[in-house]
Length: 343
Ligand SMILES: Nc1ncnc2c1ncn2[C@@H]1O[C@H](COP(=O)(O)OP(=O)(O)OP(=O)(O)O)[C@@H](O)[C@H]1O
Ligand SMILES: [Mg+2]
Image (cartoon, rainbow, N blue to C red; front, top):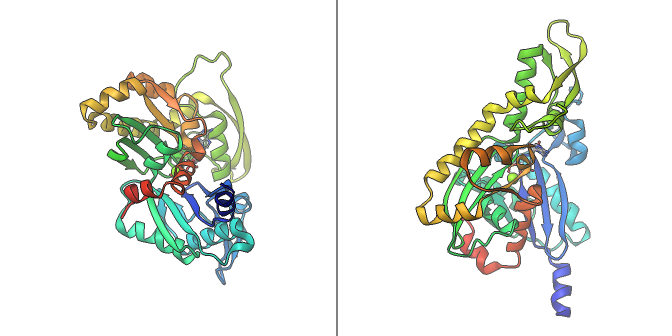
């Protein structure tokens, strides 16, 4: 026990949720040690990294012409290989501090259905950041394990992981994915929809950071019987006069703006249900659908899915950390990992 603890304490093995919006790192024996936005700021001339993570996100939309802020992941996969490598290297180094001489075993969650080329890119980026052995596991499986679903039992578990770039819907039974479908719709598409709506309706250009704040503070998927309809003042640039201005918007407008991406998510869930074998479907009637990922926090999304499917819907207790917690559990269960890792 003593030696096990010591070994655990000094283990270098990492579990990573390399997300479109956030990257989380879990170290065996220590839990989540890093939880930062997937943003890198680099100088344009020499490509040197200026900032990574939280610090970099604060610079989004505010950089002068010689530096740029990049979100290296898009739609759940690597869009900028070098920037992803820089980001991983930074996070891995940060959590390893002085023990960096031992290269770690790394397990990374990736969206279901990514291509072999995309898988290779994730592996290469991790290896270039010093990883010794790299395993990839499908995010919905990781999320299901992370939220504590009994994935090993012969019963149907439906998990919906709504991230920044993708929504992953999966039905899992006996440690295997029975059905899965990933669509490139998530928090980013919701933001784009809000931005487009404000532009169309008010001729107002708003930035990425403002848009995300609107979604988080005002966004909803379902008209709740709230007596006080929420309002928010937002600032942007008037497209006609070119001058900064403030307008007031309400939650009904944002719900309307969000209807397209929300309907796509709903459709994906319905298609998954239609494709679920009847015995497993019966289990889902009893157990319900579990929502994870940051998108699960959108107000009223659970109520909408409940209304549209007539099934119980449960929002995971910690939707943003579900995947990394699931990947983290794999560090202790190498047998299971070998069975479920993508080969
Ligand atoms: N309260 C909230 N309401 C609505 N959306 C939210 C809320 N909190 C966070 N989000 C959104 O959740 C998204 C991030 O979720 P998450 O960290 O699960 O994504 P990710 O894992 O990085 O992305 P992906 O899995 O697609 O690669 C962002 O788009 C963020 O704006
Ligand atoms: Mg995710």
